[in-house]
Amino acid sequence: MLQRTDVFIIGGRPRRLAAAIAARERGFDVVVADGAEPPIDKACGEGLLPDAVEVLARLGVEIPS
Image (cartoon, rainbow, N blue to C red; front, side, top):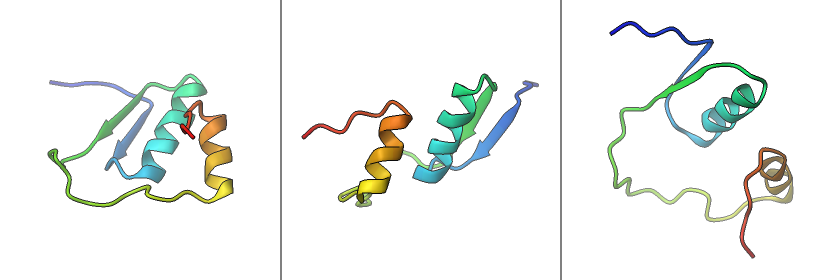
């Protein structure tokens, strides 16, 4: 199967997902490929610094209080 895309991101780590969201918001066609299979036994995002919360808010991610 052949598929065309503007941006192809390998791996679903937080920085790469943020880049995918940002590219998509700018109108690019984005594909993210990640080989990990759930459940992923890894602590991730247990704490966020204020700058990270601000960037996530600009990307449209709401952090519940």
